[in-house]
Length: 255
Image (cartoon, rainbow, N blue to C red):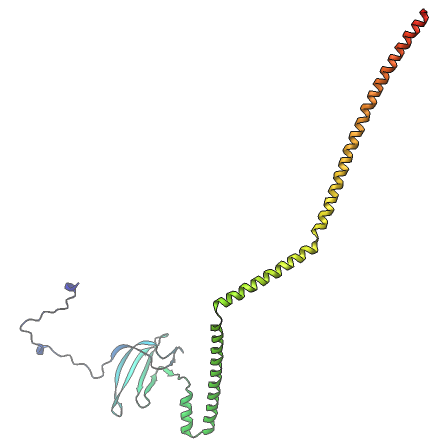
């Protein structure tokens, strides 16, 4: 990197700097540099506001034939940040400020202290007193607001994180207790136990009815078998009786 930059220049032994021709610059030559707007201005062409402190690229020159107590006055040329129209400012050594020469108008912020000084100098004492009372009222309101903010801040500082968590846990527990009580009251009002008893009684009755039906069916089936057995036995008895009668009748005839 050092070889390419060429920072060291070669001066031959017969070099004479007095032989170098001097460039004569004009007396009113402009200098270009980057600066900031010293005051709040408004562009006349587009109406754009440029507040104090806006960075600009400007050209500076000395005003020929115009001084204040031997102090030189300077003029600055720069462009609007919106429409690029040329604006010109000039130093005002008498008032220790700047003056807009062309292209814009200065818009100053209202300063109460300067207005009070001007009123006192002009001799309007009543207006200056009224303004002072208004300023004092404003200061009192501002101080009251600051005290209130400080008190609120101290209250917030006094409340710790642990106390806030304890309060939240207590509230949560209370809400749970209230919800449980409401659920218990609702369950009591519904009376699920009575319905269960009724259902159990109905099921018992149904079971008993089914058992009775089964027993009746069994009883209905049993007599039929008994009747059939009786009929069979009776038929057997009649057949035996007839056989015995016939046998007896035959024996009587032989006798």
